Length: 74
Image (cartoon, rainbow, N blue to C red; front, side):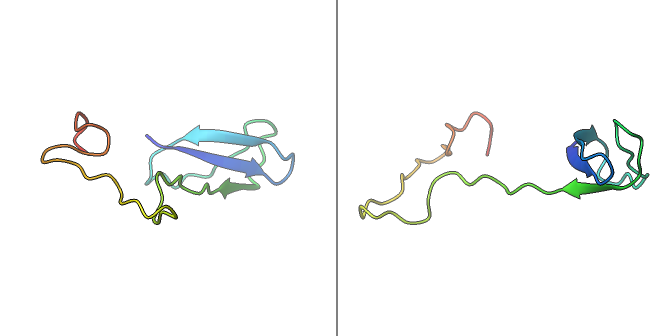
């Protein structure tokens, strides 16, 4: 189940709640119990780069291998 980060507009507390992606029940602040909360969205981290200033090519992976060695199947 994913965890979502919320910020209370009343007391300013920032907290995480684990809930289903389809759960539409109201979220309440874990500190002051206010319903005036907003979800905080985080930027995704990117690994690697799309261009290289040195002119090098990105690493090539052999058959059956992946970026992390192939053990996870990504």
